Image (cartoon, rainbow, N blue to C red):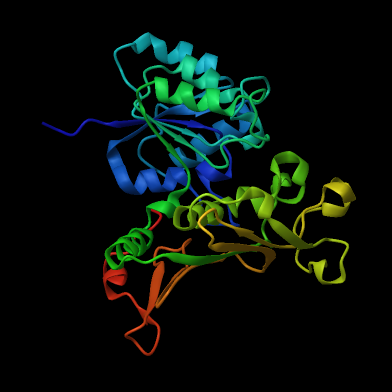
Length: 344
């Protein structure tokens, strides 16, 4: 018996689902690599119908399997009505890649999750991109209600914190447990390559809080994974702003001066430190500083006698370095190199 097709609906025709020159994210490409001719893209939900149609046309013109019958719907309700004609057919995966200011809450315009859940009840798996909401968590905004709504579907639900699934992360967890180590501190850094960043949300923090949230949330999640819950009142932050002398960027390809009010411009460098409830200390540095397209990411986990350093997490060859008390120097984990967890 031949394997069944893997059916997918994309929510959003933008960069996270279909890629851009500025970074490595591209859910459609990863699904194409994973499923090949078995991929069956049912369609794209996006109010920008022209952009969605262009994405499908580009795939078909390039001969990419899986898009021949793909449709475009401007709303979840339109998609639900179209797909309800085949009520017995489940949707294997819905990727929610719309901007975070349209998601995560119970009231318009940020109630997209609830509309999708209502329109597509036949969905088996949901992948919800991070951050899951751009609004402050509160009963009024209703993020907990949205989380419960996903849980009540009975489907598999994941968030887009793909770095947590890296083999190196699992190895650090296993070694900490096996050696009975206590985490003393975590140090994370995320350096953005900004030269080809054209999306307004990267430069206007009023849209979705800027890259310190949309990007560095990956490393905040990893930090909490090892450090545990943070004492939020302990967080202290310093920034280099656009108006500071070191904040002048030489290769911005976006019209920041003409389109972003000064009070809405993003910091160029953000350094935060906090205390975990365990007594450990965490730190996070985010910089909008690199040219080209290659991002630079690193996470250190420091324990008594052992330190771990995970680097190059956005590449297909992330690396884990370990220094132990019985070794005179830091060494790369050969097991991780042989079986690295790529973002594919």
